Image (cartoon, rainbow, N blue to C red; front, side, top):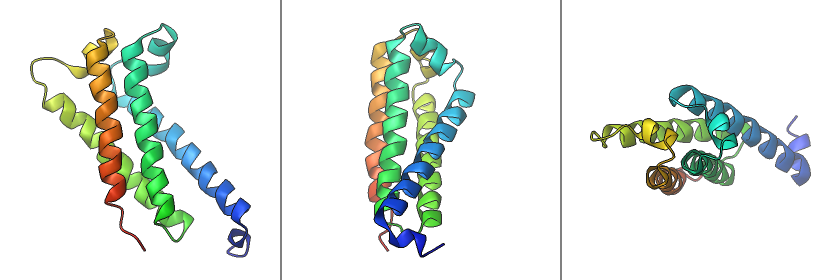
Length: 137
């Protein structure tokens, strides 16, 4: 199997495939922890949900970008990506906790674009912090 990974295009396809599957899985997990249905709300034109979801997608992809850059193997890349995702998920819960005057999920579901935008920025911003903390080989 290692001989296959000597080819750059095989390694690229492997990293891409694993990252894409992980993003899909992580979006499904986010769907479970939010009180609204992301894709139904986006279909209805809910910009706040689109912003928050876009931030999550960008955040997870950015974490995987760093994990690919600093990993020696596909398994290590996946491990760093999973850890980064759970840190990002924890950040989402902290956002909810740190805003006791309103419920983040309810505001995003109501298309409160300010809250959706802040949720997006938190996901993107913290993905850079998480990515930078991934230890180089």
